[in-house]
Length: 217
Image (tube, rainbow, N blue to C red):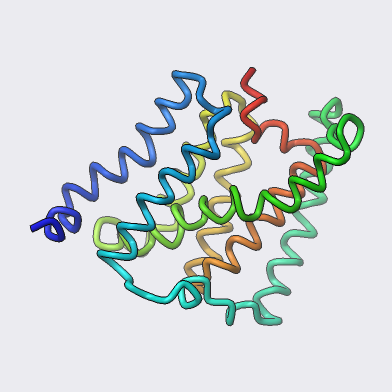
């Protein structure tokens, strides 16, 4: 009975609306962005339980799929990242110059902490929710043709809560890149690695300010 409820299409539809739209709206309206990591991990816990018990009772290593760290996959990721990092630098330099290398100027030690914790505390749970969970959970609701773009749209909306233009603007492109990587490889580890590359680059350049809860204050 419980399994039928959680696998019901109507329940899934309500669930995707709640996770993708309602929760970000609540965070936005109540200015809860400072607590985003706690909220993110709460949602991740829920999605992991649903994923594990009702979709893939699999070993964690199989979900991570480290075998996807191939020369070909990494070459594509690094070439794309190198080019887009230059674009990020130009955007920061010309339009947000006051934020360029802001962490290095004000609290350089913080950058090291971000580089170490961001991949695990932020990139990993986001990619589990918006790729691993999303692709498995909603494949019967969203056609394969559109699932990448739906994942990216919800990923973008999740960043509206930071109350600025740059976070959702960059997130829609990031969401498409990450969803495509996951669809191609099925690797949570690889897409988390790619997400962390871009996330840490944003913080290094200065635009990470707009992806931080403190930016709404």
